[in-house]
Image (cartoon, rainbow, N blue to C red):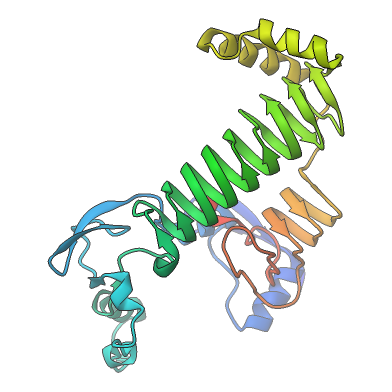
Length: 327
Ligand SMILES: [Zn+2]
């Protein structure tokens, strides 16, 4: 089948269904979509709340829950939900062909017990205000996380320790206010940094140590604003930047903002890809409009494993490979 341009029944914008997409829908025995990719994404995201928490009465206790108190679902404590007492099939109902599907599905959804949080509760220690996570210890407001300890205000973190204000970080320690970092130690205000130590307000750096306000460096040390210094000069210059003060930090932020704009930016974050579009793609092929995907390709079976951080092999192409947790 040829590609076709259709009008989204929701936002009325045109969108294209490629010929391979038709093949996929055929294979799955589902009709071609009538909503555009963005509207489809919005509908999928409607099902997800794991970052807003509520105090909710649950069977005589007040629990921190992902369900608002006014939502009339049958919420039970997760410890109980995961126990052996529940036979969820006992909540089953016969399907009535004379009634719409979603009406019946909604009534089933409201009757079947749901756990108050989505977490590996048995692996949680002193981390009540966290969700969509497992193996957390002493964490607070941490979401979509795994194997982390002493972390506050974070999302999408795995194996992170003693860190605050982190979004999408792996294998890192003593970090503050970072976005998209991996294997970092004592990195502050950094973005897209890998395998680096003691970096401040730097971006797109790999294998670097002791750098301030740098962009796009590989295996460098003692650099400030991408200029090399001796260790002693570096230490003196950093002292002069007065980064322990708010004024010093703000000044650095302004300087890096204009400096980074002048640097060449690679068109995509990722490597070892073939025929891909999107961002943060690694070892993938034939992925379009995909985000944060490792080892993905357009064929095979769906294997989300974790919504956040494990390899994704997605059967669907074009727009449907979206990391839903980034919202
Ligand atoms: Zn639309």
